[in-house]
Amino acid sequence: MPTSQTILLASSQTATSEYVSIFWITLVALLAPLASAATRKKIPDVVFLLIFGVIIGPEVLNLAQLEGGVELLKELGLGLLFLLAGYEINSQSLRSRQGAFALGSWAVSFSLGFLLALLLTGGQGSFPVYAVIGIALSSTALGTLLPLLKSHGAAGTRLGDSVMIHGALGELMPIFAMSLLLSSRAPWAAVLILLAFMLIAIISALLPHRLFEHIPGLRRTMAAEANTTSQTMLRLAMLLLSTLMMVAAVFQLDVVLGAFAAGIILRSLTPTGAFEPFSKRLEALGFSFLIPLFFVASGMGIKVSVIGEQPLLLAAIVLGILVIRGLPVFAAEYFLKTGSGLTSLQEKLQLGLYSAAGLPIIVAVTQVARQSDLLTEQSASLLVAGGALTVLIFPLLAQALKVAGSDGEGPALTSRQRRQNKKQQRVEAVKAATGAIPLVKPEQIKRSQDKGPSQS
Image (cartoon, rainbow, N blue to C red; front, side):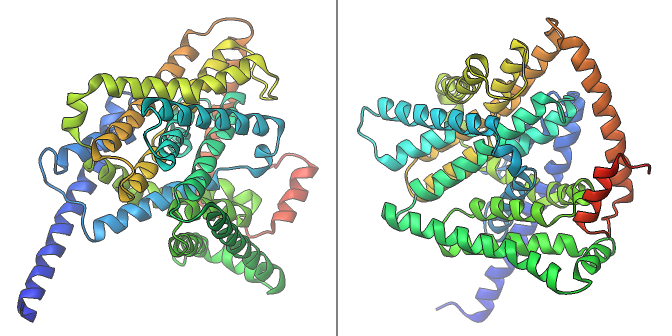
């Protein structure tokens, strides 16, 4: 029987190992954006995070391990990534005509992925396995695409807005599909559990609104303290995130559903004029430590030997994602009037390429599948590696199309959009520098906006 001294020694060794792992993870997290900058941002830093994770992980140098607190931090990083994705979603745009077509495009993509898995297994697999493949091949990496759209000058343009809508549904719908189709419960029980979660999420959204309305000065106090070391708005964000991730875990749903819902709720609580500065704060909180840790830790779990043994299968996965996710989006834009305002073939191709870039959902769904023994470690590694390649290749191709495009009114429109984007970036830089959250109520901001542009 182990003595207390032996237990304490083992605990100390484990803690030391975790600190060593955190050191290596934070080191490569710093090196990743520097490596990306060396390529002039052509290769996103998230790809370097995965590559460096492979290098320091058990498969190569074995400098870091996924154990104890590192695994928990990885889950929190995943939660913050999806909170940010949910925070960026404009619910009104999802209810538009374009949102309806984006939903239909995702449904087609999921069906194609499901059918492909069915054909490849000859019908010998199980329904959850088909669902895992369908979800993985039909997702869009909205959280990863946001910084890329900004660096490509597409943020705020018709193309950028279209990518946001398809990206939002390309993350939201797979999350719902994971909760419903990968549950160990009966379908009716899974639906009831999901409805119960949504009820708690609605209560979590209404409660702060009611408190702000009925407690005099609470909204103003929260906004004022948000600009001090108290950081009340960020603490509210963390409370929402931990609450809904906890509820999702208790209900045995995937925690990314709770994180995504927390982001949507948090947006509704943010004063209109405070969206940009608060978004910067959330990005600083997430992308400084926990989100890079999530991607590095995900890279540590990739089996390099499998990728080296089956390069053709990896290439087939990348091509399959392009066909299954990118092609339906492009076809809808090309043949139907979706209301996106995209007129040139170049823009529609770009939209299809951006929409086919998927990684976070692939990481999340393969993680769930591994825990449920639905996928082998080799298959999960190939899917994650394929997702990483889509984030690397497809945005590069979309950017190349933008540079090469020269038909119609494209160049003049692009030039105006570029000037507008630069102006918007200057405005955002000022907001980021001050970092102040307005102390007025959202309705007061709305009235001032209705009167005309700000003179500040």
